[in-house]
Image (cartoon, rainbow, N blue to C red; front, side, top):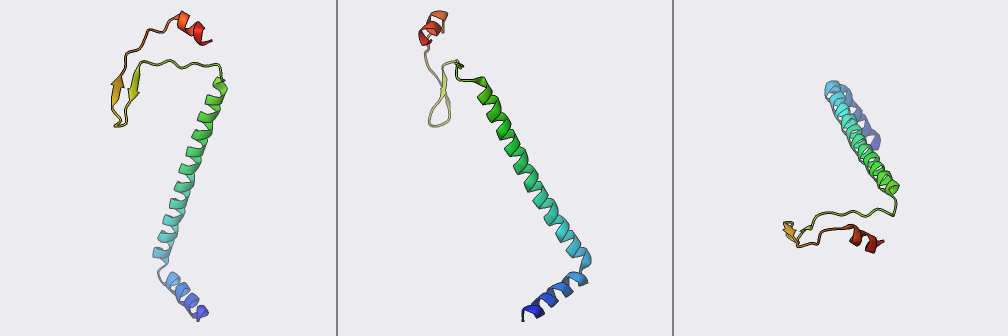
Length: 91
């Protein structure tokens, strides 16, 4: 029974050669595209990770008093001006 099914499948493939070729070509292009996208994403992730690790642990990032609430909207808060005196207190 299995041999009969395989024979019918092969007969169908040989009877419709163009359809079979186009189907295989589509599958090959799709798999190649997925592999390319995953590898580009992985490469970008490792590049960003290496750049962040090169910064070191003695970096202080100072930004304006802007934060995002739970709803995603930007909210402003009152902040003091960052001076050298405050920087020395942090160290």
